[in-house]
Length: 352
Image 1 (cartoon, rainbow, N blue to C red):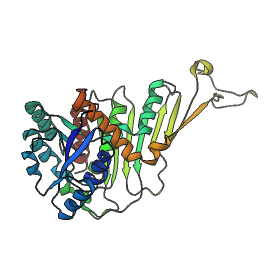
Image 2 (image 1 turned 90 degrees about the vertical axis):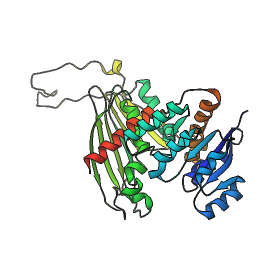
Image 3 (image 1 turned 60 degrees about the horizontal axis):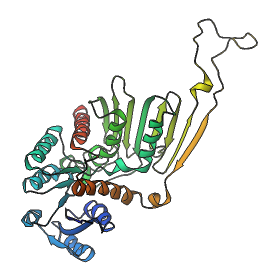
Image 4 (image 1 turned 45 degrees about the horizontal axis):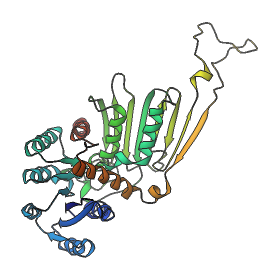
């Protein structure tokens, strides 16, 4: 089996804790041969933990001729420039999210990938979240009918004071956390067209100047309404997904889902009555019927639940392996991520 030789730029929470950790568990497919970081203590730790070459300047990686992929896990506001530089230097790139700040920057990266013939991939591992995939399967089965609304809530209560709370660093809940639920939201909405967007954002509990409360409503003719909430001031988070359909619905978290539905053939067709409604005593009454509900549930498999984030990352990296080694198409494309960035750009514009 061919091994993909990887270098990682950045050894922070993402570069070390997500990428290096995940790839270290996929030794048959990947080999981490080098990392770059500006902090000496991170380089020393990488030497011990990964047994690889280390560089203070990421540009020194470009002098190597043995790399199949460079992972850009630099701070958010460097994703665009460094990803562009990686491709122009002759290497495939996998960028952490957010890919860029504007849709125009994504267009530049897509154009650079075409000109250089290099792979441009974006680490949107939540597309492989087991609960999200299960929700999609339930919807595709048709049991809950036509989807009217999908609510996605990435909520908790947390005060934050690090570098990702600053606008200058492309911080805030929308660019930090938002790429996950917004990516999923656009899959529910459909990636063929841009939705109409309404957004409200607030700075509530953060020490920085960027937002930590986000509400986004996506809508369009013939499409379900998508309600996305990313809040750091929610003391009572109640669900991750809540799907409303014409014959039932789905509600649940990242580890457990419940859904209920009735069968159209059992319920029969509704017949409009325009005369006053009465009950069996000939008294005024509301419309009432006893639907027979069918209820089902799902729990995340034990192995995935125990290591949810590494599991999603490894599913993502299996896809990247198949793309680089076997020539398969990317399952998460730059054009899909462009739509996501365009939505978030419009949210920032509405809340400038």
